[in-house]
Image (spheres, rainbow, N blue to C red):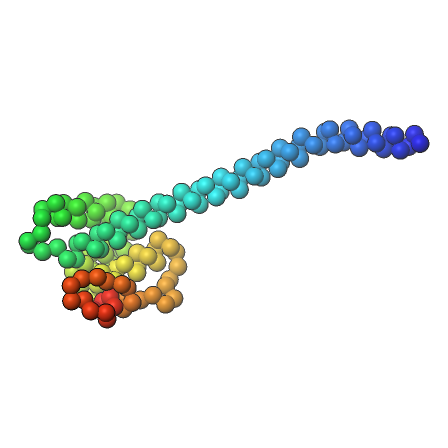
Amino acid sequence: MWELATVGVAAGIIGAILGPIAKTCLDKSIDYFTNRKIEEYRYDVRIREQASRIGEYLAVAPFLTADDDPAAYRRARQLAFELALYLPEELYIHLSDGIVYRNGRNPFSALLAVREHLLGTEPKLLNDMNIIFHAPNAGNSGGGQ
């Protein structure tokens, strides 16, 4: 009988000592995973913001004409400067070549190169011929045409 009581007291003491330690470990583990998910979310938001700027630039810059409003030129210039600040130089040059169809590059190949950089994966199915493009008389032949 005393042995059972001794075991019970010992278990209670061990529980009182280990309980807070286990709770602290569990709390730290939860904090670590929560903070990691928050950082992943922040990274995804940053990538989407960068992608949005690149998309806007590619939607405007290659199609500017002499008749366009000066505000359109200012916006394209601002975006070009922003992109120069954070894109790796090879990608920025690809973008530059793409908007003027130089060195066998076009806006769609530039878009795909930047997409690959931002997402960290090479597209498996997507290519410059199946990027959706809207413009008068663009037809339905896909991008790159």
